[in-house]
Image (tube, rainbow, N blue to C red; front, side):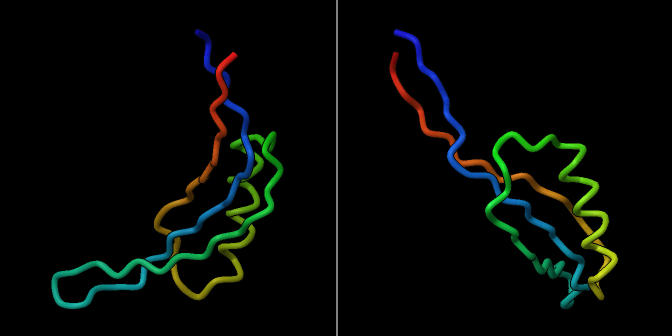
Length: 73
């Protein structure tokens, strides 16, 4: 039994450093959807770097979020 994964959707998530609240880190996020499933990681990172220039908060992390449909062959 072989299982095949088919990418259904990809999202780009920027996690921004919102500072500290006492001893707790505040993370704010922006998520961009409708990313092409075959987009390369390097291309997504370049887009994220461009988008960070438009933000007031510094970047903490760049994440690629994927939904994959698993099918039995």
